[in-house]
Image (cartoon, rainbow, N blue to C red):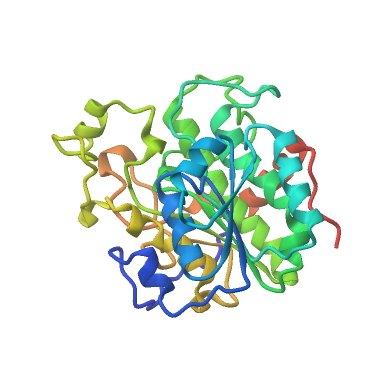
Length: 330
């Protein structure tokens, strides 16, 4: 069973930028939190939301790096590490204690295709950071989201979700061989399923959730890939510059931030939620192919396992167990 995935006439395209999407939208009086908001797509997302009038808060593991990246943008930075549950709790507690509503939460931070690493709980790094950290953050921020009278949560997935569903029996590679790309794909499927399950719980409280494929953009996320590998994939040119080729899904940072801010702010999505979006539109559900890597992730579309309601509920139960954080009883 899948969420309703039906593209619409949005007036935007894969070439649209975050500023294009936000033209005419006034976010004055709104508050947004953007994880990873000081690197790559996250920086552009933060800048665009602030330019539209929102108060933007960027939690950061590396405050010095964050302040340098966001210098001059009038964006608040606060300490938080998605790999440290205590740090997540502390950040969220500070925000909730201020009694402010939270209108936008964009989960943009993440790691990709890293060597096998485990946190202090023994959890695999990509699943723990990309999914469990954001799950815990959203749950701890729930009082502020519910108080907004209409909030949106945007979970950055990826076409990488096509590499793997979530292995609910062994998400941390304790009984199977570790593959960095399978682990990344699993975490990106988890990001999409999180939006499905959160939206199901949040819509009664005015909180809607979306997942997003921003596009293929060379940022710090590719730190574990060599220049030779990036060049072989056509992601950078001979001078090491990122390639923009919309026919292959390769976008600029400004284009990559567009779908996130659209999901976070667009009145076109009023009354909707739980859908996977790309190219500033809702994606169609497409059947899997035999070799996703050979296809090059070029075709638009979400795979069925990333919008499956039953899988989303099972992942939610697992996430509550592994974080020891429960959805608030409202």
